[in-house]
Image 1 (cartoon, rainbow, N blue to C red):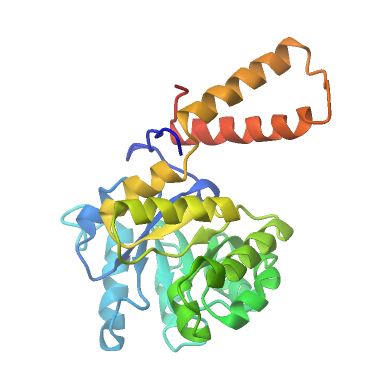
Image 2: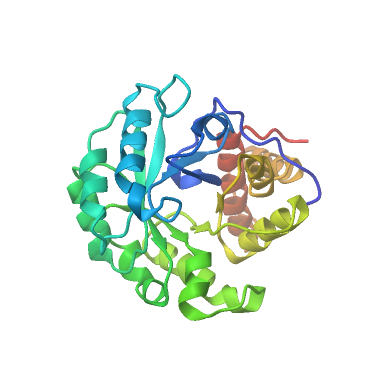
Length: 290
């Protein structure tokens, strides 16, 4: 990136298909800072961040937050996604039954997704209208990525990179992790879904996080799971169009309109597609040309 865009202010509501920062926070944690972070998607975690003996307690905390009584957020309820336990666990049905119909529920992130059937069963159990982001975290999940992406109810794929590494004994290197990321990108395209959400970057600082975001963009991913509120700004900046890109896009679109949308050569249509995409993202994220 040659310059930095202004990331979306907290009041700007970003649709799930364009969400960059997915802030994962334990449902039993302090939700106040996370709710005020300005993240595109706040995700309450009922899965790995919760000890097995406290699943019921965490579920009640999430329900309280999403119901608007404020008991989990210092006096104010809110809107959020919820990462539910995997379809193969005893907690899945309790999670989805407790969440169904809650006013603040934006959607669910389904852990350990390994088949399209798991996505559809989750969506149906929630009433058929709640969006499901499928979190792919295993070799089988990566192998079945196309069936997951084309399943009814799936709105986006996400990569559970840490559990994938555990499942496959894969090193945390760009080469080793390139295949599963690319597989999710291709599956998303085949399924007509937005670009997938990358897993979190652990260790290092802001430069490492920014570099990881830029590498994810190069592979075709457009979102990232965050584990701390202070990661949100870095991710939103790195995954947004730059002001320079936005200026180019709008200049090209203006010129294209001035010549009555006449195509002059074989590069016009690809440039038009890129310009329209950059303009759409800039308007959604509040990035002005510069």
